[in-house]
Image 1 (cartoon, rainbow, N blue to C red):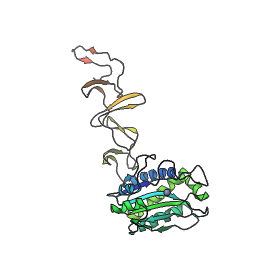
Image 2 (cartoon, rainbow, N blue to C red):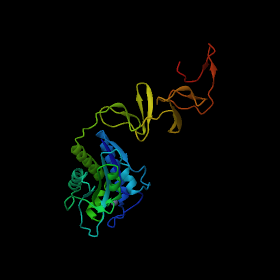
Image 3 (cartoon, rainbow, N blue to C red):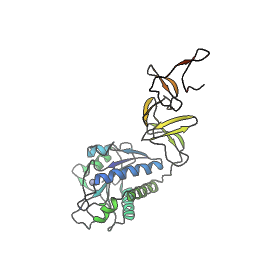
Image 4 (spheres, rainbow, N blue to C red):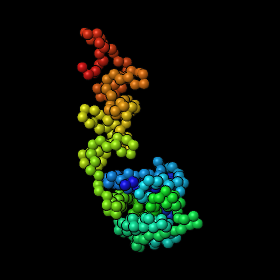
Length: 294
Ligand SMILES: [Zn+2]
């Protein structure tokens, strides 16, 4: 299962007229990252349409980024003239391919957010097919696509609710459970080393969580995992002011190492020696380095 998530707007966009602290772009950025995290617990491969919140990208292009995915979701909150308007809606592809999951997600948002009016789905046609560019792009690459409006940021109660980060976490979790129920997905039982999303990850026990932005010691070797949970390899890495070298197999190097034709000395904690290291010939004439494994 592969799902494409789209944060509906970039930068600081669509400020709420009822609470100046709320930007639709901020909310959807946080929400789609939470959805990603919970989806990955179900072994779903998640494709994001943006690398950062600051990154603009065309509507159609974002929809088309879902090529090869089973579902495209663009996260939003809506706006209306009337402050009292308060309901979630999925704008589903006009070919009907996303109607079922679209309604289930809108109803999920209604239940979790406690909106005043009922959830619904709608279809909007334009002169070139789907009215919405992201949905048109998704349809063009054969992905069932929908825009999920998490009620209205012109409604004070909905806006206040969406400003709360723990509410967003609850919402994302419930939406992912809805997706899991709809597609009959089971939670990941992965543990240990897994090749995934173009890198090596290490899953802790059966928690479904992989190591990210941290060291992990497997056996007697240390490994570093980046923010995506991918093992770093064949790279120098600075951590808390010291330099470490992660070998081609990812393990943290110790002792004397040749890297790109130069010699470096790394102590038994993997830290690169930046001061001159004293070379002492031992009784057999071999050079000894302080801390070198004997
Ligand atoms: Zn929007």
